[in-house]
Image 1 (cartoon, helix red, strand yellow):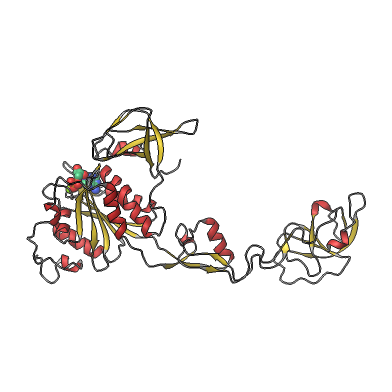
Image 2 (cartoon, helix red, strand yellow; image 1 turned 120 degrees about the horizontal axis):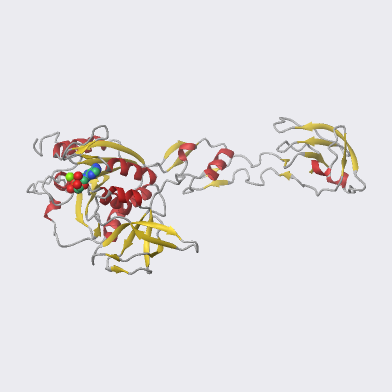
Length: 442
Ligand code: AMP
Ligand code: MG
C-alpha cells in the first residue's frame, strides 16, 4: 500500500500526508539526549485534552458523573405538610393544659395513613390517628407521638402539650418549588441521585464517561485462550489498562492484539476512531527495529513521540488521530511501564474529560522504611507497599526491583513511590511522596 493511495489508512485517519516527509518517522529523528520533564509532558497532554459533549443518561447510569445542566425542582419538598412520626394529629391549643397527671382526653375521629389521597378536615376539640408521612388533616397543626398518649382508638388520653408545628414536616421546608436542586458540575453520588429522584428527574444531562479503547501491540503477544509457546507472551496490558481506565471512570473497550505490522495497526486504529474518545496503545514505542507504533504514527505528524525524564516509562507517544482529533496515548509495552504511564498521563486525561476538577490522584507523605536510590534527572516511580502505622502515619517499603517486566511484584504493591528528579538517594526514616493505587477493597 502506498501512502497516497486514496484509501490508505493514513488518509482515512484524517491525516494529510506530509508531502515533504522523507518517510522517516518524525519521532525517530528527535534529539536523543533531551529528556522532557514529566510535568511538561503532562501539561502538553492536559492542555490539549478537550471535553466531550454532554449526554442524557438515566439516573443510575449517571452515577459518579458530573451534571451538565441546572436542575430546578418543579415541586416543593416535602410535597405537602405531613406527620414526622406515628401519633395523633391535634390542635396544639386543645392540649395546652395536658400533663402526665392530668391528661387531656380527645375523641379520635379517624385514621390518616401514608398514601391517603384526601383527608377530611378536623374540627376543634378532636384529633385523628396519623402515621408517619401521612398528610396533616386541615385543622390540625401538630402531631403528638404515640408514646405520649395511651394509644387509644376511639378516645385518646394525651399526656403532654405540643408546640404548634411540632412533628409536622412542612411542605417546601427542604426545597421550595422552583428552587435549584443541583447545578452544573455537581458530582452525582448516591445522595444527589436521591435528590434527583425526589424531584422526579429520571434522566439528566451529564458529562459522559469517555470511551477508551485499549490496544496491545506486539507480534509476541497471544490472547488468554492460548498457552504461550516459546517466544510468546500472554497479553497483559490490554486487560490491565482497560481495568485501569474503568477505575478512572471511563468506559473501556479492549481491542485484541495487533502484531508489529504498520498496515494492520493503521487499519485497526482507523476503525476504532469511530467509537473512541481516547485510544491507548501499548508497545512498539522504544528505539528498536519493529517498533511499529512509533514508526507508523510518527510518520503521520500528529502524534509526538518523546523521551520523558521518568523511570519506568521513558518512551511516550501522545497526539491526535482522525477528523475528530481523538487523543491517542502510545505507551511502552513493559507492563509496569504501561501502568505507570497510565497513572501519570492517561488517568489525569480521563479525569479531565469527565470534567473533574481534581485530575490527579491524591498523593501522601510516608516514612521510607528502607534506602532508595534513583538516577539523577529522572523521576522514578517505584512499586511500594504502603502501611498505616498505629499512630496514623504512613510508612512505605519497596516491592520488587526496578525492572518493569515484574508483574508479580506489581500485583503485590499498593502504591507508587515517587522519587523526584533531583533526588538520588532516600535515606531510611525520611519522607517520600507516595501515590496510593487503585485497590479492590478486601
Ligand atoms: P515493547 O515496548 O514493544 O518494546 O515491549 C517491551 C516489553 O514488554 C517486551 O518484553 C514485550 O514482550 C512486553 N510487552 C509488550 N506488550 C505487552 C503486553 N500487552 N502484555 C505483556 N507484555 C508486553
Ligand atoms: Mg513490541
